[in-house]
Length: 162
Picture (tube, rainbow, N blue to C red):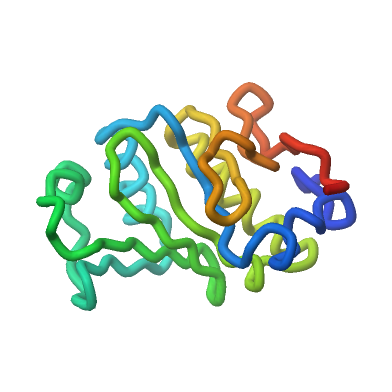
């Protein structure tokens, strides 16, 4: 199988000092139904996961329940490990945006690129929407790479020669 992206072509986008240690991944124009599709994918994928409300580990409720929580409720996080040692942290704060962090320290060399591409592709295919990665603290408007629905693969969205 040919990788979507090659380490030597994208290593700057995996450099924690250039991108920030926890770049942001976005699905813009999302909905409660999209969040539910992500929750269903997480439950059915075989990936390890953990849902937390504050410090309390809980069963994963429906997306509608999570997104209708009061503004002053405990912060929620859904941590997903697509492979051991690689964690993605979803933050269901808004029904219109799916966002999560990846840890670049866990995604090094070609194996890290392949893990990230596989995960972004799984999300993008399930939703039928683009999934893009920006630098840490980004706003989703300046992605560097992401899942392209038409290409059905992860592609570069910026010049890797920062």
